[in-house]
Picture (cartoon, one colour):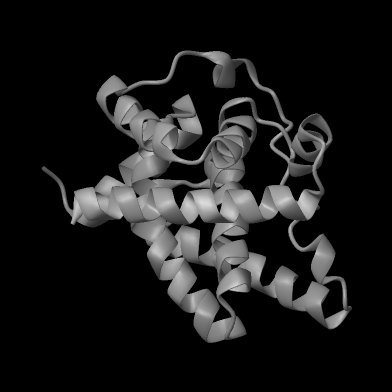
Length: 187
């Protein structure tokens, strides 16, 4: 069993190379509470903090292939992604466009063949699926649409016939609940 640093680095590499959803769940349960705490200090607002968690972890999923263990720790890399997301958010807030927060980096529309493969570690996947299945239907639809069908928030809003803000709120609530469930089991 390696150190926590090696464990996180390995999880990030598995996300990069295999689009491993259970490895992403590991990263999410480790980083989300820390990013949220940073966001609350930064913005003094829980909704904005959760938006930062969402933006950062989406970028981690999309950009994991840019991480190289030889160049530094996974924590350093993820916190750099978080800082960039935070700067972007602050810039947008200053230009008074809070409603477009994360719209330009949210879409998961880059379909690569490897993303279509079967994802590993069925026990972790089943655990995550069990928690998703406990969410209210509206939140389940959003989580499954964004993370499993890889739809953008705008695509999902059109499909569900709701405003994009509603999709964001449901996703934020769902991710918060999932983080709490997963965090409780990993403590």
